[in-house]
Image 1 (cartoon, one colour):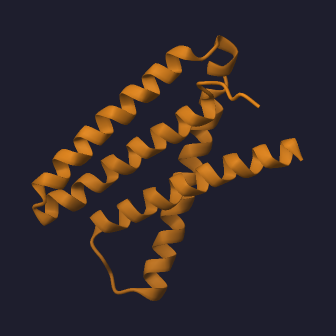
Image 2 (tube, helix red, strand yellow; image 1 turned 180 degrees about the vertical axis):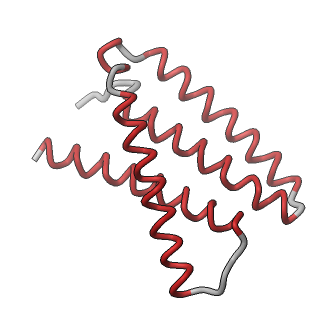
Length: 125
């Protein structure tokens, strides 16, 4: 089956990936890793441009689904932050806030992507 070249779900995940990249920047700034900062900035630009191009390819009806998906993304980012806060409180010594927000954002985007996949599988099955 041929998939559409663009979907609101892909755009929401791409925006989530951009959030993760922005959340990792303070971590590398604190560590003095200028090369990694540059690579993240380049990757952020590429992913953001790809998301914008995909947004422009979306039909109007599909664009109307984006606000709901972005709310879901924000909820998953918050859930990821809460889970990682609990994880680090229980199992690790306190780490820097930079690592904490990086881990929380990463888990949140993973939860968002998996929940989108899972809900699509349930609709098909």
